[in-house]
Image 1: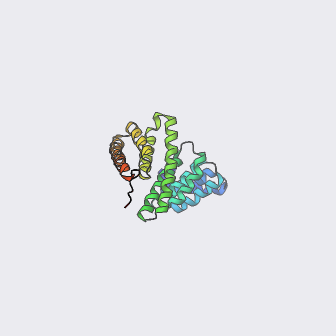
Image 2: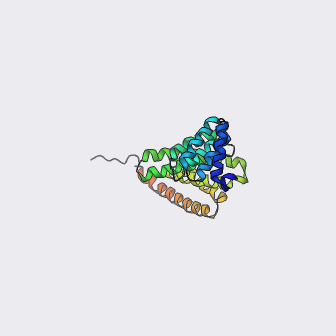
Image 3: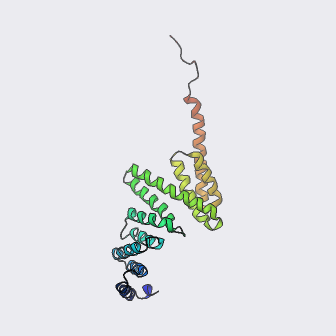
Length: 219
């Protein structure tokens, strides 16, 4: 590709193309890719934005802009999420779906570190929604999506454990024993043991919380 071999020549060629035909979304898109390649992300975003306006139903345009927003040089995850949301209805390869799950999870962690707990909970909830979509689609597609399913199960099992849905979490960790790589299986084993201990403790405490009928005595 000319972008990789000679970025300045690629930029010049794409500039000529858009000057001759301002509606050529491929040229705007290529210009954005080349600027991103030479570490000029804000120039890239400008050109990706034009490509998106010209081709609003093309997930590649939105995914490219989302990727650029989430790069370390820009680091605007909220803006990246909005791009991936626009891409999702048209994205047959589901790149945007995976990115939405991961970006909401990253934002949740950032808000947790900043002690912004309402925002943390909101982004974890959104991440869980997208990971559930990944899991549902992966299970429909079969073997080719086992890694996606394992990542989704790992997140969702931990999420449901932390929100107190222990039975759901237990079921997902059990599935992870079959789906996951060795590191996933080890986490699943430890977490299933932890859940069992929590449930046993709860069973022991429940009778103690209940007062027997007629316990009250009169002086």
